[in-house]
Length: 78
Image 1: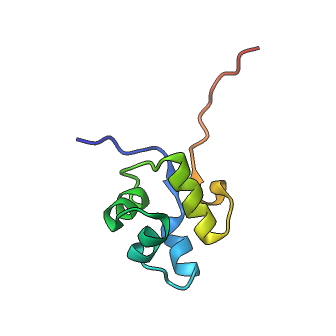
Image 2: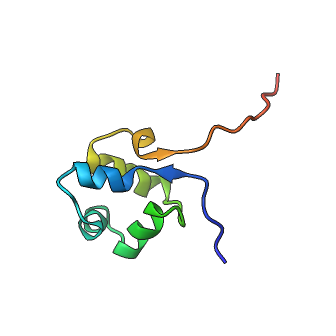
């Protein structure tokens, strides 16, 4: 069983605010399969850094406008 990623994303919302782009259209523009886009949207798969940047580029937004990582309380080393 694949462990879900903790990374969340706004891809579905971005697709709808950009002309109701389909998953297939996004997949074609970034060079992956529709199934990959589905898995990324559902949080079952974390894209490569390059694919993440391509997704952000397609929507004309920053990477952190597409992907979010939960703020974890990590102790900083002095």
